[in-house]
Length: 71
Ligand SMILES: [Zn+2]
Image (cartoon, rainbow, N blue to C red; front, side):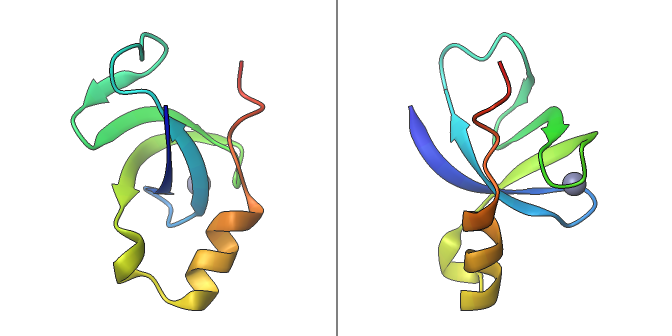
């Protein structure tokens, strides 16, 4: 498993545990998938984000939210 920063289609940033090989709960489309956003509590397209492209403020925002509570 890997911790990645992800952004939903509404622009929310959060930390997600990305499981490359066993992601039956989400529709897998490469770096994108469809899942529940823990920030806005809605379903959305989620895309992995390269942390190097984010500002410190955005990184802090992403660190505040984690989708680990999703079963
Ligand atoms: Zn969202």
